[in-house]
Image 1 (tube, rainbow, N blue to C red):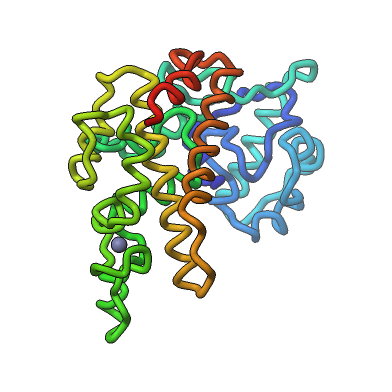
Image 2 (cartoon, rainbow, N blue to C red):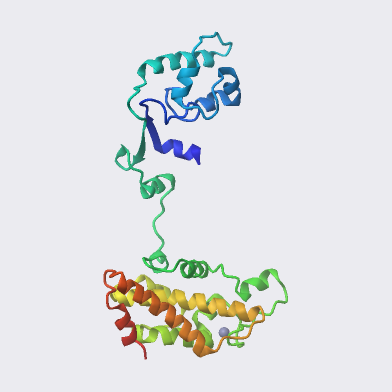
Length: 289
Ligand SMILES: [Zn+2]
């Protein structure tokens, strides 16, 4: 990433000790390596990883090069030699929103390296604080309809059995698995009916709308979003287990596992005294039906 990084910092040369002779821009000529390439090291006798300080010391004798650029660089070095401040360290300054400064900001650099698009409407429902990355990732794939559900697999693998392995009663699609399926709709209902009440739905598009709405308050929003991801993760995993010939997990056990994952998360947030989540666990227990 050196080439990209070059656009985001500049060096204030002091003694030249932290400045790379070949790869930093210390003169108006830009990066010398771009100018002369590997050949330049042979012609000048300056090592590839030499600092500017070292180069100034070693390029002493003035020789007449046939290459004009080499002569110019030697002239430049002679000038820099006078300018190096022997008791001042080199300083790297990073480009930020408000110009160059000594501290480096990952987020500002990230914003500068990418093209910004307006966030998609459902992003907040998938990528939110305190989410569990592996859950978010699988949910994100589901959101893009990129999980290898049987309706998709059958397009490239003709003759594949498309029946849902959880209910054995319908074609397995994303919307069926989450949560039209008799098996998974029960799990989903058990998790969120107590929170959503009348708003509860097992239709994918209705749930996505619900997830983006945070007017129900911090705890409720978090619990629904987190339950959604934990359920998708657990059901997808269970579906894969069965597909690979393992015995189905007992419903009560699966339910307990998901509930435990959610309770552990809520208890952690409570311990960390996260804003709006200090009585998250009580809220969860209060919504169990
Ligand atoms: Zn099913």
